[in-house]
Image (cartoon, rainbow, N blue to C red):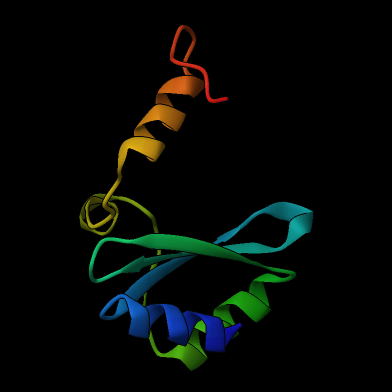
Length: 93
């Protein structure tokens, strides 16, 4: 998992991340590249996720908000998908 994070960081000019506990499924690692591209990984445990980001050597944030969240670039797909979730928004299909 650390290798995947390192590859993402190299491809996007560096990366920062945030680890969130998602219950029985484990932990989600959200990655944001220096270029604004983002992605995520799911680890089976929070410990595995935190170990992976530590080994990858990226900056890890406690929360996904503020300046960190503002670094994410979104495109038409994300905006359509977000709007589609709302009542009356366009359908994704």
